[in-house]
Image (cartoon, rainbow, N blue to C red; front, side, top):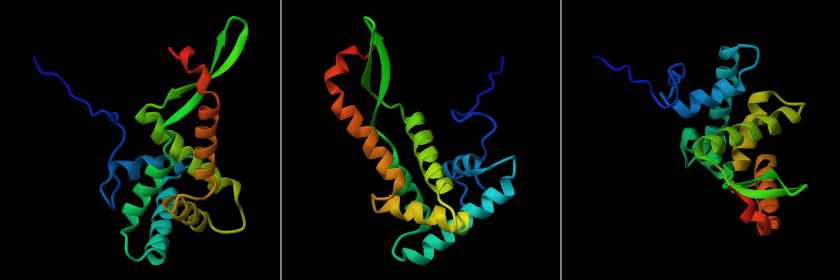
Length: 158
């Protein structure tokens, strides 16, 4: 009897062609619009080239991973209905959700801005996140601030 083993990430996600990294591949998939993966790859790799020019002492891939790591939230609030009242209950964020929220916040910050090519905007946002500033970091800090403000309701978490 043979057992088919699939990876944790699922059978469909392959490593990216340039770095051979799964995180990069997932980010490119999130960046992609209307199935235009080649365009998304071009934008991402252009952004990394720009990061390489700006931050000389670090590898662009390392800057990307650090930026995503900086944006990942530790806690968030979820709405719970208890006795007719809704409470914002702080809960710990699972690692998979941390990653997807970080991707979403970076891409939302990039898509809200206009006037420059997407690759440049993505580069700016990733550099800002690497330095622990920017729109995505603000979103993370706001999420943490909400959780801190509502920690009195933590006993409702289950």
